Length: 189
Image (cartoon, rainbow, N blue to C red; front, side, top):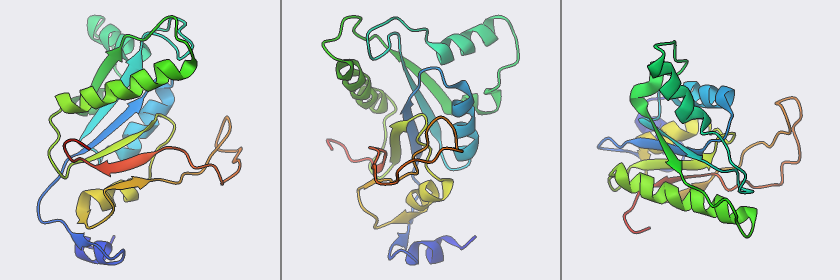
């Protein structure tokens, strides 16, 4: 790997003088395997994983809070927790959704807005980095490392990611731009 100054200079940026923290905040439903894959992939470049769950699906139908329930159950029964290696970096937050939404977008927007409040609770500092995506939108660790190590890049970067259907075997059109972003924290923005 290139040293930080050379890596940053390659993109016309400069190496950071101080340290920043990286927060990965994402919506989670039932995808335990994807959650583990995401945490293992980004473990070395993310300081804190913020798992957002709702007690309803976007449609308003009731839903178990799978991750929160799993963690509570593992603790209560003193059983092995597959996320034990990373629990010091993980926080889980449950949003009480609307059981009778006017549209599915109402609960989705509500859960995304909930993320703003959760980030505020974590007291991000100016210049800290946060990733805002869905659970299945996993950025490359190299991209996150660039934001962690360099300064001079855009305040907000929408990441273009490959799009797959059902599995990594079924890559679909590359024209769709998912709303996945990585951003430098700035109060009030």
